[in-house]
Amino acid sequence: MTVVEIDTPHGPARAHLRPADEPRGTLVIGHGAGGGVQARDIVAAAGAALAEGFSVALVEQPYRVAGRKSPAPAHQLDAAWEAVIAELRGRGDTAFDLAAGPLITGGRSSGARVACRTAAATGAAGVLCLAFPVHPPGKPEKSRLDELDAVEVPVLIVQGLSDPFGMPPEAPDRTLVKVPGNHSLAGDFETLPSAVREWLRLRV
Figure (cartoon, helix red, strand yellow):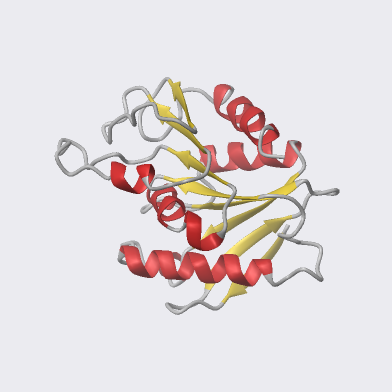
């Protein structure tokens, strides 16, 4: 694994790069609001992608790199994410090449929202959402489904059946995989990677 710092409009981000031997595509994953790229579901999804021949980049947002626990505002998260994708796309002369096959972006929770909001701007061919936070716990009236509905490329959502952040509805071009457990997705680490592998096979 190679770790690189990438300048963004809101400070340096950090990308953990794991190139596939013969890449068929690339998966770029972001973390949740309070966690890092070592979250078990992110690691499971990354392993599944590598097994399917996808290079993987695990991206830490600038606020995490700076040691802050509170997430930055949405527009800063989005701008930093777009800057990271642009920098990775410009690394075509290195072992990590976004030009090799489709680019899939995604993340868990807050990171999934970022990937959805920026899907068009980053040229993503698909979006992977791990525990998409449909609404704040106990506040279904504050829905974030508009961010999900706005995505115009295929989406895979892996969601815990008892997630207090809600359950997204079925929709065209949206694959919803329900697993035991809550927002941590800790209840089933067999279904998640198999779902990711099956969905990625359809993207190439």
